[in-house]
Length: 216
Image (cartoon, rainbow, N blue to C red; front, top):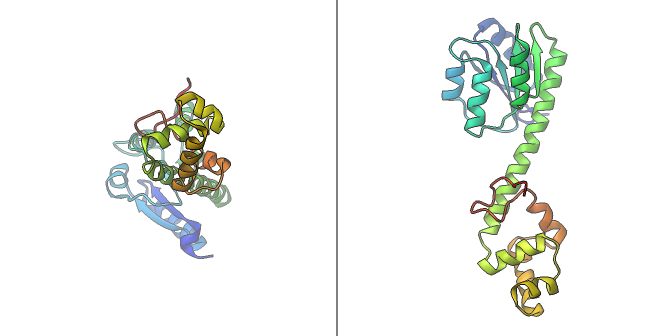
């Protein structure tokens, strides 16, 4: 397996000895490791890539790991975070997990535990990246639909038949059938089931098709 295939690790820790040891071990295992000696250098210099994980020290000068995690979330950076810490209070751990951390390792931890956490984070990041790619493709293809085709697409996703859609908007069933075929063609899918899979999580009722789905 090539180095790139294993993924990237962003290593953020103010202790040079820990960075040196972890970078050496993880590089030998086949990961690409980018190290940062502070939260500030990571936030200013790191370039998002995938698949990757962020190995983040909880206690650092100026900004804590929790604060860095919150900043990442605020800016939409969804790379999975693994916290490493010499000691942490329970509220910090709870906050970290609520903010989406995939694991919390206490120093000293074994390489086996670290690699297991990294592998889990990399797998999660692959899933996130795949979903974001699908939603981006869905947005681009939805933009090709005319207003009427968008309406028909919404009704199709609601499970309504051609006759039901025609009854709702006063069109002939044959016309709806034509719109339906155009929707499938422009969305580059062959069936309703494929359309449902492509558009899962997309909010067609919002101005932004990728806006979060509501609860109503």
